[in-house]
Image 1 (spheres, one colour):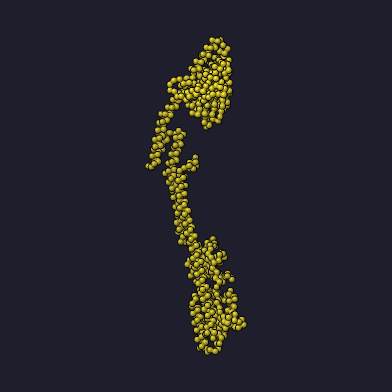
Image 2 (tube, one colour):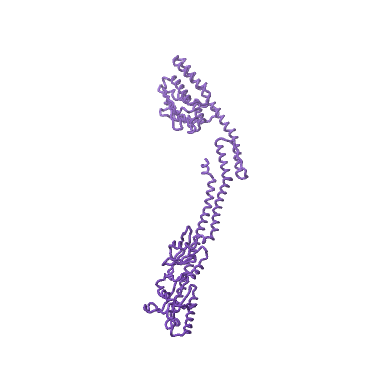
Length: 576
């Protein structure tokens, strides 16, 4: 019952409507939040790509510029004189030329923050001239520098990320001629790392160079995370999202042809969206607030609307069941208090109406039934005395004995049973006795066929004397002029909750006007004057069983009147 009320309740509709109103706002908030996160992620990714690309281009441009300066240094006159004919100069001249070469080397070195050292190895002079000093010539190192361009993976110094060498004479001029000198520029690993660190504003981020040849990593913090991040990167020269140790990272990688390496930068998403955590908290608070508002709204609606309405509906149901001893109160001074007050007034009025009208009507109906029923008893008594008089006058003593016995049964039913209603089986037996009495009277003129009462009828309880007057009417008005060929048939029909008792004769004195007059008389409500037997049966059936029951009159298949007693009973109230 409660589930049924919930399905039909106003509270359910109000709560659903409220949720449907809030839902678009909530969904729109989610969409805006997701769009903001997506836009921020794209902007950060693009920023990382731009920053890394700018740094790579700057580094490569700087290295290319330094390389051009290195090539220009090959044509330096002082360097060529020192490398080609050092014996033609005395010590002072050599020193002056070495100083000028040092100045040029220092100028090139100072022009780039990535150069760790720059020097010229001169075999003829047996000296190595750097930007700041002059040292002994290292023949082994010289031999390695000859082939460093073809073996860039050789690590001569762990603090050097790249060697840039230019030798003279050039390789394409001759392969047999000994090198006069080799200019070497060392790109410092530590300085490159310092530049990489300048790109990291977030302590959780990382930047690294990864050699393409041996996959070695150059980074400020050489931990396992760098290697794991690099192994996860799949989209070169682009930004992507990767997951390492259940943590999400934004990663960018760019190829550098100058260093034959891949430049990578990664940043944890948690650190990227750290500033948005407060928005996440606010969004969570919005969700919780929405749920709390819905719950509070539901409780409010339940207490102030649903409970009063349910109480009122339950009260109406009690009234429908006939419980008028009910009084409902409402503690708040609102519309429901007024409705409850008017409901209580209505119940008091209904109680008064029940006492003054309904009960009074029932008493009047019962009195009317008593009055109608009492009109039947003397009617047959008169006819019975006429029949007895006739039998005594003609000397029909044999039939007189049977007739008096039947008449005794008849009046026993009339006088000993004062109840207004009887089982239909007794009513049918009484009508059968009456039919036998009348058949005995008109034995040479009228035949009676009385069918057996079906079992479906035996549980019915009906007003007394509803069938015998119909049979009496057939004898007196339909069959008296039958000239020895009269036929009276009493049969029964049952159709679901309709029970019919049919009395049909073959009288030939029934025309359409008489039938119409008889039908109209059934519905007359005369307060004075004589009430016919058929009319009182019709009225009693309607009083007892309702407007669908009563007496129907029509012309039958035998040619005479067909009177049908219809008893309509609701299915849930079979035992009447």
